[in-house]
Amino acid sequence: MVSQFYKLLGYSINEIPASLETFSNLVHPDDKEYTFKMVQRHFEKRVPFLVEYRLKHKSGKYKWFQGSGQATWDDDGKPMRMVGTIIDIDSRKLSEEAELKRAAELAEKNRELEEFTYVASHDLQEPVRTIASFADLFEQSYADKLDEEGRQYLQFIKGASMRSQQLIVDLLDYSRLGKSREMIQVNMNETIQDALVDLSVKIKEAKATIKVDDLPTIAGNATELRLLCQNLISNAIKFRKAEINPEIKISVHQNETGYQFSVSDNGIGIEEKYLDRIFVIFKRLHGKTEYEGTGIGLAHCKKIVELHHGRIWVESKVGVGSTFLFVIPSEIES
Ligand code: ADP
Image (cartoon, rainbow, N blue to C red):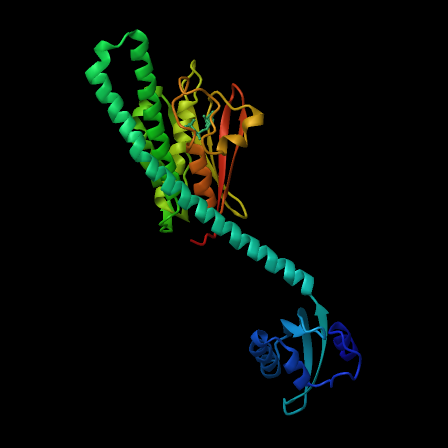
């Protein structure tokens, strides 16, 4: 151990004295208190000693090591000597530190991006609102002075400004998601019932039947979970086949990681090559005239599930139907 200790630190044997004092001088000041506390704990409570600390290499640079040790005690319980091992863990620690730094930088970039989305969409509201209201005024004052083609152009301007307004509202909602979050116990039966009440007109119009399993109570954010269910059920109704009434089934089963929920429909289905892409913001597979929408619903769903540390995906067959599945882990930190 002693010779290994010297070698790892770049010294030859006897170049520095083998003593507790030497060790104490070489330990990084930030690791000293903890390391010696752990030695003390080992002596007193006889719990295993295994600590990661930095030691000063002969080159002057600190390197990470993992030290473990075992003391022997005399009959009175006084520690006599300690033998141990030391392993160089510098490269593992450096890559762990780099990984943590990257994760922190990524979180910061995401925060900046969300802030930017919020500010940009917020500031875009005003000019778009101005275009919409002047298009209305223009129509009221001049529509009768325009020919057919002019009136059609005006309708295009009005339609486009209305869609821009809706996109901006969606974008603002998206960037607000997760901003203030209260995590509580959410009864998913009640969540689904609330979503169904909000969708009652659509359900009636489409003559949809919705079967719901008995659902659990889970830890989560009530508003976000309702929005998630509402988006998935609303899509299951919207992307129905023309010739049959929508049949939607909401199920759950528990596995070792958490609860896996599924929302299946007998709708138009999705081509395999699009199964991942539909969760991307503003990604739509159909024109605005075929099915209304802005393409943000599933991006909302993905963000909500990920805020709950879960995962969402879809299985589908064109012409048969789709099943959206999401897992919410049992243990969630807010
Ligand atoms: P939107 O509904 O506003 O178009 P979404 O983000 O909710 O936006 O959905 C993105 C796209 O995914 C939809 O335009 C549609 O093509 C497809 N999609 C979503 N849900 C279903 C479903 N249940 N069945 C078939 N296609 C679906």
